[in-house]
Amino acid sequence: MSEFTEFDFRTPEQKIAANKAKIQELENRKAALLAKRDQMKVAANRARLGDASFVHTMFANEADKENVRRKELQDIQEDVYLREYELKKIDEKLSQELPQDELERLQDEKDYKLGALKRVLARNPEVESHYYDRGQGSDKGGKNVASFKQEWAMIKPSLTNDQKAAFLGKLKDYRAKYKNVEGLNDLINEVENTPTKEEKDDARRNANKAIDKALENVEYTSLQKNGSYTKSVKIGKEFYDVVVNSDGTATCNGVKREW
Image: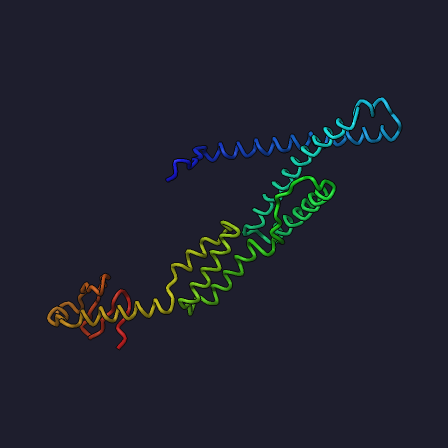
């Protein structure tokens, strides 16, 4: 492990408290920005009415104007960061498996906030923006997980190695893009633990080999006395429990011999 690795030893409650404090700080900055905008509007109105003394106080010279604009841009930048933070939180919710009406409500909220952000950026081209719109929520989250489950239900009965590999690749790519969408990890685990047609055939062949091995030296006396007996047989590195019956049938791990 690198000596420069940083660890966060805060408890979940401490992390939540820190996040709430940061959000409150951003809200306070936003409120200060709105108050300052009101003040600037008053200044502009009084300037239009010819209040020279007020104009002189607010803008003594061009340098003062530049300073005011610079400070205003700083405040606007903070406001943009807050708006982008709110949009990212909405995107996180849209990536979850939620009821359709909730997804639609969140999408409406996102559209409204995104439109407001774009208007701020259009009026202030000097301000930086780092928000990337991933598109409509209906293309993500619950709807896609539901469609994955429908696809899985269709291919599961006759699942092949190629189908399993391709479907798992699709699911994991989706998880890498949208993180831990609700229900996705459970589906991935189910697919990984479902044997394919080829795996079932291999298991059946190995079971038949184990049965044949167990039948090589059948203890007929034990069969006649007890009706059946169990023998452990090693095939490769695997051990199989074979049940041999007096009627000539045998099973291995629940698989009956195919003659």
